[in-house]
Amino acid sequence: MTTYTVCVSDERHASYEIERKMLASIGAELRLCHCETEEDLISQCADADAILLDLAPMTAKAVAGLKRCKIISRYGVGFENVDLNAATAHGIQVTNVPDYCMEDVSDHALALMLSCLRHIPMRDRRIREGAWNLQGTSFRLKGKTLGVIGAGRIARALIQKVSGFGLSEVLAYDPYVSAEELAALGVRKAELDEVLSQSDIISLHLHVNKETEGMINAQALGKMKPTAILINVSRGPLVNDADLLDALERGTILSAGLDTHNHEPLGADSPFCRLSNVVLTDHTAYSTMEGVEELKTKVAQNAIDVLTGKAPRYPVNTL
Picture (cartoon, helix red, strand yellow):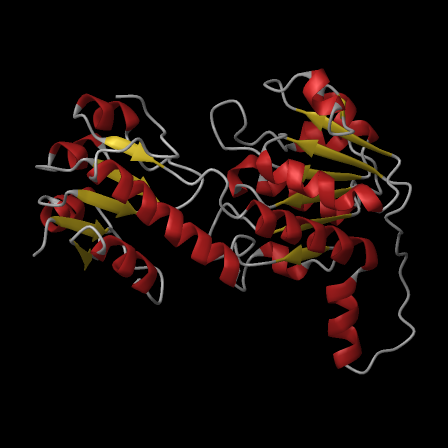
């Protein structure tokens, strides 16, 4: 007997057997939907007891159209596509998975760093074309200064991973983390200007909001070393594309490793694709077999907890 109806808002994964099996343990039926708009959410998920939300826009209008929803369980760390005020006003619990993919994204950040330092993608392409003994200056990681902008879970996982590489120092800019807490991680708290000017590698690890959107602009890039590397595994809009392109073309900085972009998919006609000093990946830092399994398990468990009257492990709003 079906006790609950649980809707997946937008079917982005190849399989939902993990969620289906877990939810079946409480008599919940999983329904796969194809929602791209707030109207889609209302028409397809109005009778849902829980919604496992991916990218569909859970606006105030969409929330108001849900008749009996108790929880919106978001796939991922962010919840920018959920109107939290509307959900709270309607008594709907919103959850996320804040510790999702921190190992995977920090791995990817490190991979991009090493790829930029050693020009690995460029060398691979040229060797396949028949070239050999390629010119170009590579750098070692030992002795370098790493700067992280944002010192949350992913940044901390990265800091732990590079601890054995013999870095000169790790600097962090994060107004919301104390110097004492960072010092316990072996990191020195610094102002943004110092991180920009003193770091050999700068890795971005923060959300996009009014304060951070476009923060890596011409002014910020101008403060960086000409040998500096910029890594972005967070959000594309943190970076002003035109300013970064100009800096890379003029050699204001050495290179960049970009997994997230302002326009996705990036497209072969993107000016970034013309540059040899950029390493590009397809917003895939989060995607590993282990990471996806963890995400699915925790998203389903959030829904199960709320539907069965328990406090969820990862609440976003307070009811």
